[in-house]
Amino acid sequence: MTVTSATSTSAATSATATNKTSLAALNSNDFLKLMLAQMEQQDPTNPVDQKEMLAQMAQFSQLSNSTEMSDTLKTISSQLDSVVTAQNATQAAVASLAERIATDDTTSTASQAAA
Image (cartoon, rainbow, N blue to C red; front, side):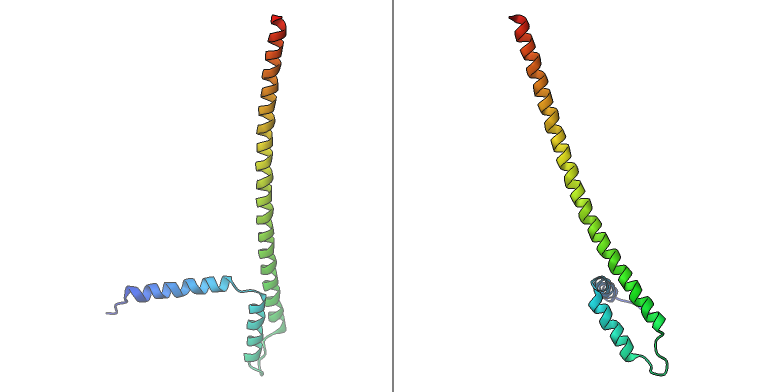
């Protein structure tokens, strides 16, 4: 019977989490380094297909563009939220001002009628 300790399981989980974090942090320079290492280590009698290499580069480029687009959309969303907040504040101020004017008109009309 094999018994696995809790510490080895948590260590494996921690290592997996670290790998996921480090993979998410890869950039184009890391990709190029990996591709160069792959080319250096390939079997000269059976080189990697050029179409496969181009497909990998295209996938990385698409991922990079998607990430940039996501960041841009987040920025736009934040700016739109600021605009909506400013519009709501302006609308509240205008409503308050209109209410004051209406109250002043009612007071003026009542004063004139009494005179």
